[in-house]
Image (cartoon, rainbow, N blue to C red; front, side, top):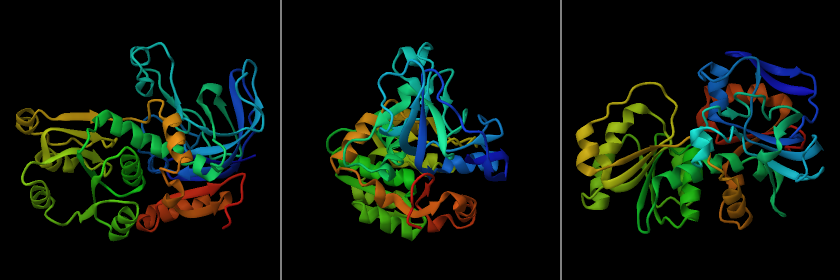
Length: 343
């Protein structure tokens, strides 16, 4: 079968690999669509310390159940499904307190084990979620990025009337924007350096957008009468921006951090303590797939609005090259693996 395999940093290709069989407790999925994520690009560049090569990447995907392994009783062959990539042990401290997304023995499909950029993939039955009637496989492949948004917003504990500021209008910033609107947050500002992305944010319901070269702190003071902004989501993931976020945040504000950048940030403790700020990290998702699927099925999220390119599987190396050299041209690139992209 065909698979997109990363053999080493910057060494990748569509390759022929042996097709898997449904293992005990697992489900064999025939992949229809898979999305390219920024974390896939980090793996390709060798910037992910968790990966062991060679690796078949891909953690945003949907398809149909081809076979089920021994002991699997709750999944039917032929079912249309999407896959939560978080595989946890169920025994460690985070798992015991309901935080399996930071399991001490965490595995992520497409990172620690082979993922969805292949024609068939084995996944734990517990990670399979049925797609509601009327929700297509393309949308199913995009549930995972919305689960990231749902997770960080829950970690930030929004309250009625809170303003939200989102740094970054890439895919994750846009999913946070859509999810925040679905949660009833009405005043949302988005910051980015690329005007095309800001235009998309406005189309998807941002109250206002600020260009990153503006005096963002002055704009925040004017907007809030000097009070500051209660909710700040860092989807830009640039460590150097943290001091500005601390200054912009209102007293009792909450800042959600998503980046895996190892570069140290300057954290002024005075800003955190005098305002009693809450800084929360957010990794992957904590059982958010049902919530996202429910909102998608109800029409409160528009996943296909994120898609800028639909490409065939054989075109994936070209998609990687585009994302490397012209990221401003793309939002979500969706790869048709076992389904027609219409490309």
